[in-house]
Image 1 (spheres, rainbow, N blue to C red):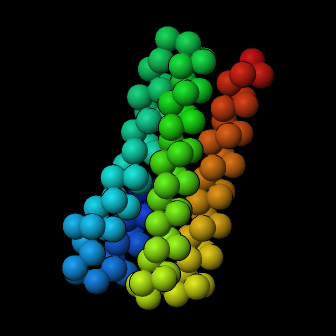
Image 2 (spheres, rainbow, N blue to C red; image 1 turned 90 degrees about the horizontal axis):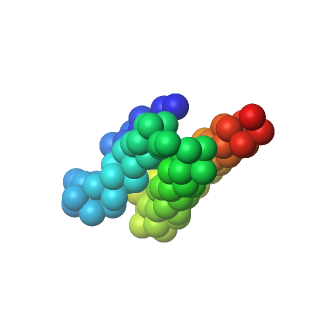
Image 3 (cartoon, rainbow, N blue to C red; image 1 turned 30 degrees about the vertical axis):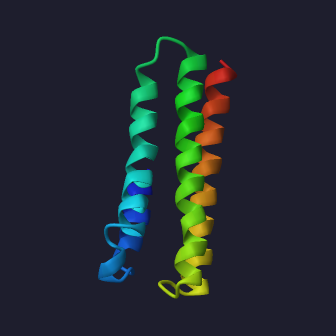
Length: 105
């Protein structure tokens, strides 16, 4: 998944004064998504892996919620917010689908 790339690219739209605030928050959230999937893949059970996948979904949602703040502050356009939010929704659907495939086995 290119989740890190999506949210880290958003950082380029932010003013320099936000690089250590909102920008840092976005970067940490994006890294957390793939990190939890990777960490969960080494779990001893499907249930444990599912918990890590839930955490990665929460990280996507946290990052997506920050899009509203970026819009309200004028850092991104409504079109950017919509486009990025749709990508975030797609990522969540993919992770949920993957999680279902694990429990269907």
